[in-house]
Length: 230
Image 1 (cartoon, rainbow, N blue to C red):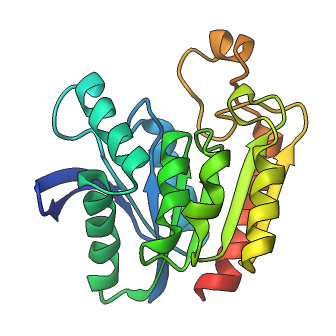
Image 2 (cartoon, rainbow, N blue to C red; image 1 turned 120 degrees about the vertical axis):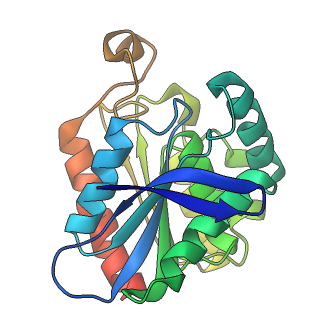
């Protein structure tokens, strides 16, 4: 694991870079953290992605101040589909493409808030997107994904924020003719793959880690990325 700085139009931000073992070049994946910030679970996820044969970089979208102030700004960018946060994500993508050990094919994966960015980013220069339980954007799916890249999305049936989101996303992607793999996991809640803080309380509100669902989701994601990034 390497802690790095990424140069963006608004100055440098910190990030985590993970490189596969062996000889490249490899495709790349930008990893977007959840609303709790860039934490140990996302560092572990970046390593897991690298172990699957992809360069992985996880930028810190909350690098410019306190979590609350940064969260407000970042969420505002997400709802606007543009802004400094998307510039940061683009800079992370460009960092990967500029490396001699990268093939130039870049995917994106995100969790909760980051899943929203991964979904909106389907039209922003990525070759495949893996949103995990994004915010409830069901009414905007048709607008968000129009002309976008292939999508592999994962939801939890007990996720109160995303009731019927998986089904609706499938319908829209089918209508748009966009390749996809969408799965909603039974008996599974929000944040099942990146361990939200205070898990005991989170389970009461429909959150909670589910290792079996997470393992299956990652196998789907890697299969999908191997198909669309190699």
